[in-house]
Image (cartoon, rainbow, N blue to C red; front, side, top):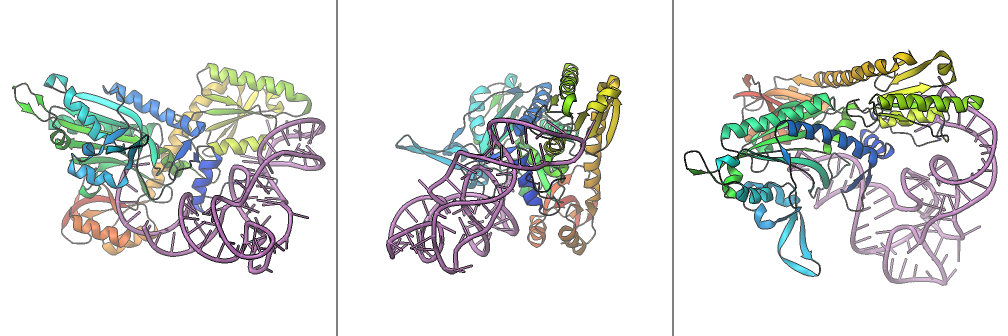
Length: 477
RNA sequence: CGGGACGUGGCGCAGUCUGGUAGCGCACUCGGCUGGGGGCCGAGUGGUCGCCGGUUCAAAUCCGGCCGUCCCGACCA
């Protein structure tokens, strides 16, 4: 192999941070914008987002939700109506203060999230219990003026969906917030092959204005946790603040109960961190914009024939509904193409050369294990279908095994500190439920409570020694 | 917001200490040979050296200010 003929991806183990940045740039997922924290999502990165979007959107529709769109600009006074909410978001708002050459009467926030403005509409849209439940989702961009940014993982502007629902009873709202958490969880497991843990947030990590926040937490390859999606039970907090009421079946005017839930482009960062390796990205087949790429290998006089056969194979795969691609580029060698498609994380490469055509076969190479097999052309489509399923499962299995090997139960605070420092990962321990011990742990170790599992056990708090329940700690992104 | 590093063609860098014709690799364009793991040869295109000011016959280089980016620490999807 020739050395230094093209830019090489930094090794993940050498410099994980540089590896991540290299990968994003070299795989053409995103590119830096002129304003700090802003990024262009390039076609390949956006294709991944579109796949996620479609999957989620189908699930939202299947659970009765409709899409809508709300304004980008939010008057400051709206943000201020819910006390905790403004406290949580005002510090990271970008503000519009001018309209043309004139100073505005009231400054406008570029939405950091849309609860406030949506509630303002909902006040008018909801009159009766017959208007409930109201199940609306919005696909949009939001902006948060972050100090430190990284492509996908933390950007000033990002894309997401935010669901905003309204219900007649507290039970319904609770059910809804848990239902949507489940929807997210399914997408993580089934599409992204990321085995997230689910549970509730502690009070200090809760969404500003929520009664309860549920979360999907993923464990990244470097042992740090990533909050991947959240679902909030808002109770009546916003309904009270925005004066949303309805007449119930008993003719009583009461406040409804609300939820909100979001899933963002941050997940693409999670995908990279969970599945990426020294060769680049690995995209689970169900998510991959391209499931398989045909790479023709031609030489001299066989070129024409190989090209025709490669196109034919590609057409057959397309015809059968596979998201396939054929790389007919004449400028690059096969080896170059192998490297390139591995960098992009295409699950399966199909090599087709003169020898294969002679034997009426093709070579399937899987991205996850590098495994190579020679398959007769006749059974190719069927074998490919099975193989893609195996890759999907294997990626989840690998990520699960990584997560489990990096999830440790500890019994003492000393052990806790050591584990967080040396091994990172999820650390399971008992917590007495007080903000004091939570804060103490955070100050000592930089670890935070990522979630409180739904199934908790009794135990002794590491710091206070008081009785407590299971909590999952980790250092987070 | 604190500490550190750095801004030179699209990307990665050298040149700055010691002022004197702006360079290298990759990418890109054209031609040819190649092709089963980032091929080779030849010819080219592309840069007001982050911005503003100062010193000087002369500034990428020295001085001052500003802006920005990245990395490490306190907040967040």
